[in-house]
Image 1: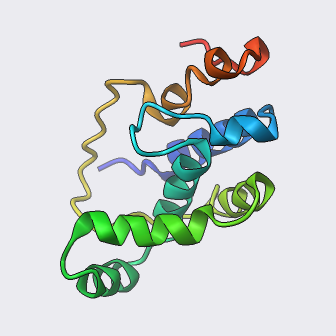
Image 2: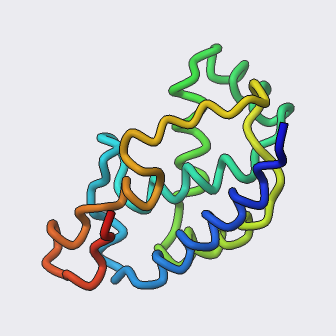
Length: 135
């Protein structure tokens, strides 16, 4: 199996560059992840870059074996603070080799184009054409 982490690091760095272009109010804009705004989505990606098997399984047990509650708890922790706080936490994981426990075989479904594409539409919602991502 090829090492996919260099590609992951590159994608994270690219997303970080894009996040630098967002105005503070755009961090509260909705994304294509129905329940999450931009700040929460970035927090979710940050959690994925910090996770270890003991952290995941310990949180899963504490949440009564409820995956959504496990994710929500991490989301609250990593989305706390200002957009600058969340961005700093995200930047800290750009070169992390940690990944959620599970199969080593990638199961990426890029039906919407990944994290950058998930953020698409922010400009339309906030009137700032410069921040739009072109697919």
